[in-house]
Length: 107
Image 1 (cartoon, rainbow, N blue to C red):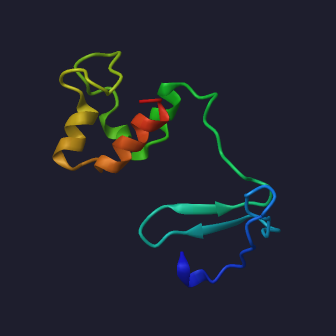
Image 2 (cartoon, rainbow, N blue to C red):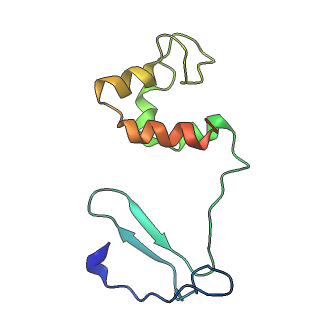
């Protein structure tokens, strides 16, 4: 979010990672949609412990289509008559969001 003019620090030559500059947790609203949380001491965010179903529930734009597939155990990958894939094809779900879902579940 370039207009915020936030304080940044150099990349460490030793660790090749950024040096912490954040001292307070702050929520920033992204103009194109979504939010960014800048929190001190957080270098990465992992979803390793979540099931595919839990990951699916984190995509709010998928919610109207969950449970609408032909098969109850639809994984939303290659099953026929998948409501989520149909929503992607019709433009109701952005293809990049669907690609993000596939990446998070390990595909």
